[in-house]
Length: 384
Image (cartoon, rainbow, N blue to C red; front, side, top):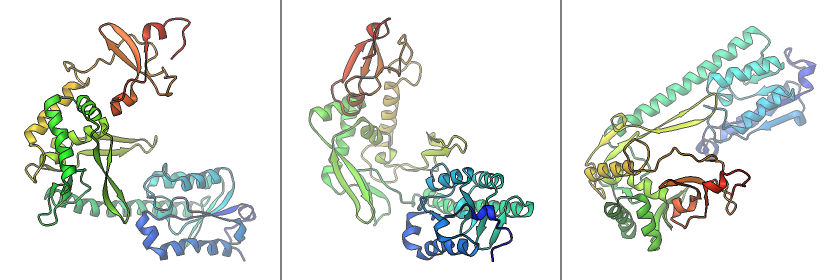
């Protein structure tokens, strides 16, 4: 005998069993939770669904439920509900489906519109009934509050250790943790130490990231990169230098003997699902402890390097960087016929041209393609 809330129109559609665990560690280590979630098929069968009508959605294993845009399984579930393919949604508990009220109430609203039941280990809920909708809404609030409390405890402990300089995190190449002192130290590998020191020495002489890159490429000097694989630990791999790698080294105050934490801030737009990252000013860092460990340069030299790099850019008036405004008509639209990348605009002494210089900027290779804007922007011409 089926549940009184289960109607014939529900049984004509599928029962979606949603399975999720928040991290890879939980997926590997917490077998009991995984087993309980897969056994929810039996709950759907007890409510009147055949096993063939039960669809397991486990695409979101090892993904947190704080957001929905990065969960393909959750997106597939909501799409199935909107297409009237689902008559029952089954989850171990509310927190498996969503850990924020925005996603949870959206799912409840869709389920109510398309007459879909929701079930967990504690009962079955009909979203067309006010009491059931109220109860699930409260469960969603409790799930979000529980996540907030968990994060508050974890973040609070992490911040406390960081303020004392005791929190360990992944160090950049050329630095490693000293178990005796609990502080970072230069790498034991001499070749790695010398490569990082060479970068700072060249910048001290050349005053330009691009010049350092060209020198390293011309002399065929590779830079060390740190690779990490689960269970294997870190290992060093030597690759050709890039402007991004050089910038990461020169912008990191850890190389100046500073213990720092909280330099970056990440926020997520819940509507557009866009991740925004910004570098915080130094006075907003959670921890800033100068002369904490032995570095490759001093803090004064690090600050001077930042001033030189900023002066080489175009971010503020009076700098020596390139201008960003001009007469080019199709800036950002011109495509290179050789490699297919977008071409950039270059202004020099009143002459405007389009450059395909991606590999030139990143690796120091020759410019791939160049075309005069006078010919490209002229009437009756084609983009190169």
